[in-house]
Amino acid sequence: MERRCHWRIGHWLNGRLGGGTLAEVVAALLRDHGFDDFDVSEVSGDLLGYVQGDIASARSLIEPLLEAFQIDAIEDAGLRRFRSRMRASLPALPVEILVDRQDEPLWQETRGHDSDFAAEALVSFYDPDLDYEQASARSHRVA
Image (cartoon, rainbow, N blue to C red):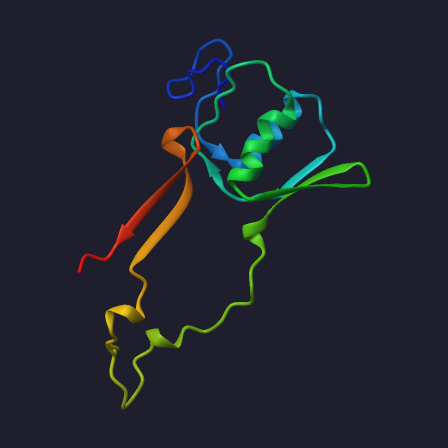
């Protein structure tokens, strides 16, 4: 995390260089703003860099991260807890398709009419190469 906008190359005086986990970055932002009662143990994800260009509150620095990485912030008896929504997982299910079953083909092809399948896919995401601005990608089938 770099405060003087040199996060790619670091700074010898007061800059910090290097990637970190999202939990480490949120914890550093909270500590830098005088917060000690927090729990980031349930935050998952990696952060390539984070630039603080101006003086800002902890909330204004952390809220974009909460939105981009789908993190919930909860206050519980004076303790600020942060939890990644993506950590909630379902029980593991066996994947049987990777097993060579006796008397069954290794793979199977199912054909259908073009109208049975989606003609286009649209994906929205936060692009780390564009300072986590929202971006989208579109793909469509060429007939």
